[in-house]
Length: 83
Image 1 (cartoon, rainbow, N blue to C red):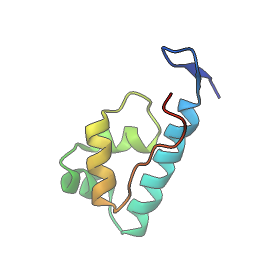
Image 2 (image 1 turned 135 degrees about the vertical axis):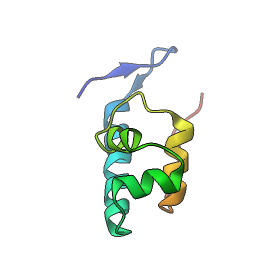
Image 3 (image 1 turned 60 degrees about the vertical axis):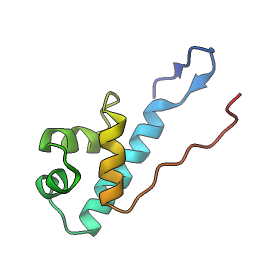
């Protein structure tokens, strides 16, 4: 696991967060009985995007992630101290 730092110098455990999202998306997609292609169509994204999201690619577009989560009935929440 690689540790990344924000501009303020605080540790960000981004790879682990991305892996959690990737796992949640894949599990929810399978529970809904959807293929990656079907999920891509329902969320207005492409098959490549869904594949990269489920593999935990760290550079996916947030607006597309939120669209996929909405289709699957998932929500993204942020925890922690914003200061």
